[in-house]
Image (cartoon, rainbow, N blue to C red; front, side):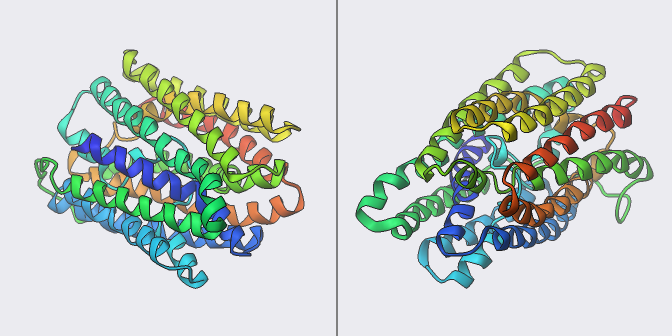
Length: 382
């Protein structure tokens, strides 16, 4: 059922992540204000994530997963049943759609990493299981991007806004199915909590991960949070063409994740691969920003998703290997919070995109390259 949930979640959440910047622009909200709205989205996501993560340490991570699905369910419901611009903005803020709309997005939610870690103790098996979930989520993400691709056809009958409203009904049903699936997964064994917050060893390790996440989060905010809008503004292409690019990218993301699940990676080599793939992602972002035509920029983006699909499940396992079992939920939430806060650089990205579209992606690429080197330096001894 966990795989079913990740599949439904991916299709619904990916459509929301791809379409919301375009939907806000269609409702005559400027790209500058879209960026500001996504600052609110990033900050709202942080408080929910930390609270649910701490709750999971005490009552079990199954419940973290269930409760963590509620914001996206509410947001998709609002988008499906109203055209009120203030309510659309509220739905965007609570949707949790800040950050990169990559193929792995739907695989991760509050509690998923500690839930898997509690069931599988061996790091190599954790990488394999996480990669399998990422693979399924990436394949299912194709459904979300195809929904965006269908927008161009539905528009001919119902208009731009009507087409989005119909498709948000589909997203709502998909998120609802994910929520129901999570209520039926096996409950994880509860670990006795000996501290109110985190053990000293966990805090020391998490501080290193947080530093790397601060850097990478700011890179994502600059380069990826508004990426669907960036393709439209940079190249003047339709929503359907953008949807097609992301459809292909989710296939290639799945290929990268499949490779990660098939290769046995030792604990020592995991940090090296995690660092190298992040550096390569940054280099490819800079190349994409410099691309003068849509076919070139989109091709580089697709290549980048192979690298991301391979590296992300490896880094997710590295990021919990220094955490005590009783701290898994709180620590993974605390580690992720700075990344989500720093994704509020999407507000700056909106201004820069309005001034010179390639600039925010170039800045994001440079920051991600730096982040890759910092990741290796801080975590290679763990």
